[in-house]
Length: 251
Image (cartoon, rainbow, N blue to C red; front, side):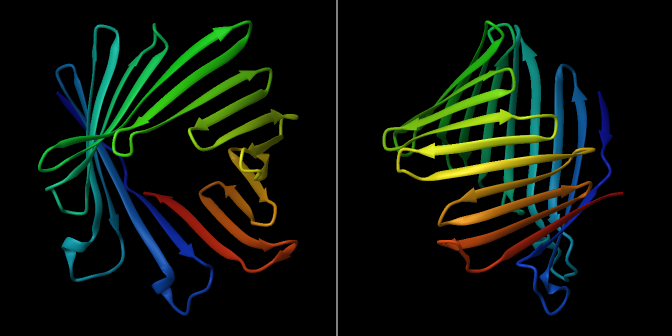
């Protein structure tokens, strides 16, 4: 077998944009590695707080491991994630994909005293007349509720229909030119939102989402920086501003 490790990545978040001292900073350290054992690929990692503390056991926020392999044309993987250093319970994701069938199956479960399935979903893709169609039904075992998402994509236009027993919505996303994309969403409840994404080049972008009489959200990605600004609305009046800033540092 073989093994490799990635360099750790540090991200620093500033929430709400106003703090009296460095206590407002939320530095997080992410590290991952990989190994191979025969036909099985192993990935693992940890997310930990980088705040100074004498309680070392409180630093890990999550620890995860993932095993992947291929069997008869199916790509199979299972991932377990533990909260902090509590190894008595884990969130489990199981995935199976088949390129020939254009089919992906995803299962979410919890493992502890026993194994309990939470949700199961399948995504089936179809290509016809230059268009891409995907159908994704999901069943929630815990609530016994189901939903389906249908996506149609062709010539720079994406149409997504989401439906549950109690609510439906449709989103039409249109790539206007190389730098601008507009996506209005209409829900069966009567709610409307409009998203405008402007590509700044180099992987950078500004995305503005307007929800009338609710909020304006702005996400600005500039290289390693990501800023999120949320402005609640009361009619046409902005009633406040919440700011979150994140910076990723690769060592």
